[in-house]
Amino acid sequence: MPIKGTDIVKKLPEGGKKNCKECGFPTCFAFAMKLASAGTTLDKCLYLSFEVKTELEDALAPAIKLVTIGSGKAALQIGNEEVMYRHDKTFIHQPGIALLISDKESESKIEEKVKRIKELQFERVGLTLRANLLALHFESGDRDRFAALVKRVYRDTDLGMILISEDMESLFLARDLCADRKPLLYPITKENIEKAIPRIKKSPTPIGVRAGSIEELIPMTSRLKEEKIDEVVLDPGSKGLMEGIRDQTFMRRAAIKQNFRPLGYPTISFSCFVAKDGLRELLTAAAFTIKYAGIIVLSDMDKYSLLPLLVQRLNIYTDPRMPMAVEQKVYQIGEPNEESPVLITSNWALTYFIVSSEIESSKVPSFLCVKDTEGLGVLTGWAAGKFVADAIAPFIKKSGIADRVKNRTLVIPGKVARIRGELEEALPDWKIIVGPREASEIPAFLPAFAAKLKTG
Ligand code: SF4
Image (cartoon, rainbow, N blue to C red):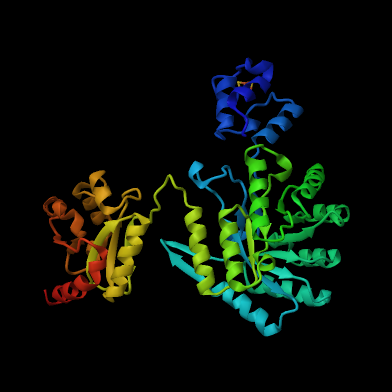
């Protein structure tokens, strides 16, 4: 449970009665309330003792630590979650999906896997969906071979890496080859933790802690905390799907509901080792996507297995309080020219996705103007006053679409046929046509309409 403002204020100078205003707030109480809602930071008050500051920093830290793996645009952030159930608020950071590569695999297989993870990218509702990490597994017993694999992935991709090795020497040698990419080192165990600590501190990078059970994790994360190592990912060593779901749920509950700090870290799950075949592996990954994993490692992936998983992840990690929306702008479907049709719709992601897909199916290159309705569909947007002539006309005028087409003819959705008259008044240079009511009718409507436009 996050600390409340009323509890924070008691710890402020003079029991919260100093009220010197130097933090920019009129009272200590106002500062405390803002602090509790993450609207300000502790350093604004210069009168906190070291002990109080440390205590409040700890109390205000997120229940599940934010951990970053990788660097630059491909960096993956996991953790920082606040709720047990998506409908309580929202899940925040999508789990990273990793592809496992063993250094025992053949050169051609490794090359093919690296190529595949780079190529498997999908456009959906204006977003690019892809896997995030490569998990490099030292199995060959040949340190040079493992180092060569790490160097190759470092050179050929910008992806974050998980370095997996039971051999500590090899693990840290590999870390040194790609330390600037912030790889996750796995596994840190109760057997190697003491020897690993000074080496981790020498060049800090996230670590994956593996234990035989949740109970075993607790002294290990406590020990790491003493050493101020907190970029930690947990693996309770679950042996199967049911055990995995139980462990993930227990750890999430302990962190979120009990604010139990030793388990307040994101987790990693190895679907690749838990499941026995491709389909079960995928089902396991789907379950761990819902049940709290921070990283899911797969032994292989193709477009048929990866796309459903990525879409499921997207759906689970969208904010249920906010309709998914795409950017307001003029989208090109195909390669339209000055004779192409111009259509308009609302910016609810689902509407955009369906309408643009149907235009694509019609094989008529077109301009699709997408009006910001704050993520509402066409009819709801109209009812809310966001998809009406007064809102559409300024958008069309500013969008520059008038300079890109000869026939200034705008197709509006059939469901809002009633705005035609007002829109003709608001856009006197444009002819307004009422299009199909349903997006599914677009492929039948658009080719004949486009032909008519050409002939004038
Ligand atoms: S600076 Fe500190 S003591 Fe002064 S009002 Fe703000 S919280 Fe209170």
